[in-house]
Length: 262
Image 1 (cartoon, rainbow, N blue to C red):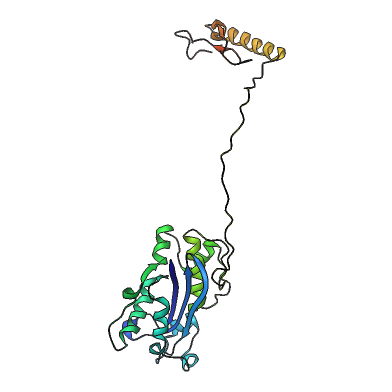
Image 2 (image 1 turned 90 degrees about the vertical axis):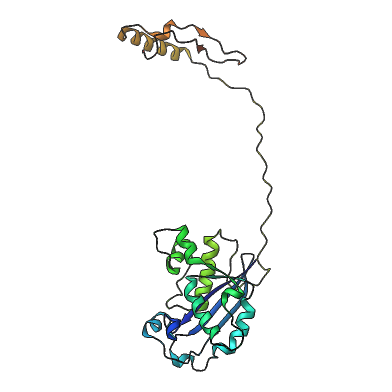
């Protein structure tokens, strides 16, 4: 199974207002293993960046002036993601921006949904942790993923963190190492589980000592003295347990009317 964990950074919040994608980061998973293959591009948005967005990712227009435009990298991007399942946190946001970028291109219309399946890790987290904070930072804390490098948002860094969170959230994996080459992870050892069979052993029964029997009789004397109806236990005949060597005597049936007495 091939999955691509994807994140974007943008000039603002609304693609319908002309905001653009300025960074794309992708991390490849194959059969729940990080393969080391990545796609990462900064993009020239050809427009100003909102102050709110700048505060999130720290990328200015001057930082991006020499970067390629979306149309120049789109075929490489689509070659990397087509046919995979995309894992995106708050997928509606990123998919809307990518679809808006694709819609600006000439030729046959293309959308992310036409090329890939999409799994929204935010929706998944909300199902698993209802009523709790499910931002990427909150999930990193919940699942013990180190996000100390995340002073500002970055598409590739966030995709790497989300890959770790997603794997932990959906069952974890052994030997996760971001950037490790495919096939280098050590295969898990095969272990055989065998039922524990105990050898047959005789039942050991500890008999009461003379001192214990004497203490028991003294206690029955006290019950008989205090109880108006006498001590019911002295009206019962002991019955030996059949087939067990050294088994303690078992009481016979309690006489009618004796239940509840002491």
